[in-house]
Amino acid sequence: DIQMTQSPSSLSASVGDRVTIACRPSQIISSYLNWYQQKAGNPPKLLVYSTSRLQSGVPSRFSGGRSGTDFILTISSVQPEDFATYFCQQSYTTPVTFGQGTRLDIK
Amino acid sequence: QVRLQESGPGLVKPSETLPLTCTISGGPISSYYWSWMRQSPGKGLEWLGYTYSSGRTKYNPSLESRVTISVDTSKNQIFLNLTSVTAADTAVYYCARHRFDGAGIDYLQHWGQGTLVTVSS
Image 1 (cartoon, rainbow over the protein chains, first blue to last red):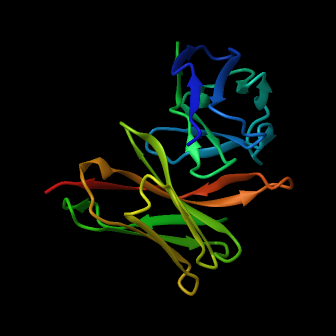
Image 2 (cartoon, rainbow over the protein chains, first blue to last red):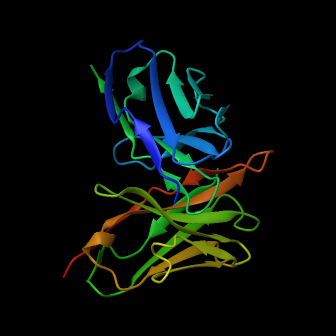
C-alpha cells in the first residue's frame, strides 16, 4: 500500500495567516493527489483534485501544488470557516489511501 | 444535486454481518464508480472498496475476505456487507461517488453524511 504522510499533524493559525500543509507519498503517484476538508460531524469535502485543480465552488484562497516530492495545500489567508481537518488522498493505485489528517485550529 | 444517504443498523454484535445501504438521489447511478470508506479515531480514513455500476468490484486487500459491495441500479442503491465483525470495525461508514478529470485522474466528488456503526454485544 502507498503510505501518505501529512505534516504537520496539527497547527494553529490566526485569521489572515498563510498556511501550508504537506503530504508525502511513500512512492511515486504522478499527479493522482486530492485534498479534502472535514469539519466535525460532517463527511470530507473535496477541495482540490489532480494536485492543483480547484473543485467548483471552493474559494480561490485554497490552492494545491507540489514542492519536490511533497504535495502542498495552501490557504493564502485563513478565514474563520477554514478551521477544520484536512486530508490528502492518493488515487494512483488501489487500495486508495489517505493521509492521517492535519488539524487546523485557531491560535 | 447528487445526494448519497447511508443507512443500516447502528449496532451490530461481534461475529455477525454488517449490512449497509447507500441510496443515491438527484443523479444517475449508471456509468459511475462508487466507493465505501470508513473512519475511526484509531485508523483514520480507510477505503473498503468500490463498485462500478456494471457490478465490477475492487476491494481493499486488508478486508477482501470479509467485504462484499454490490449495486442495484433499479433501486439506485449500493450495498456493503462486512462479515465477522469485531470491535475494530466500529466506525463511521461513508459511501462516495468517484469522478475522473480529463487526464483520467480519479477523485471522490460526492460523499454521503455517513452512518455510525458500533460493534458490541
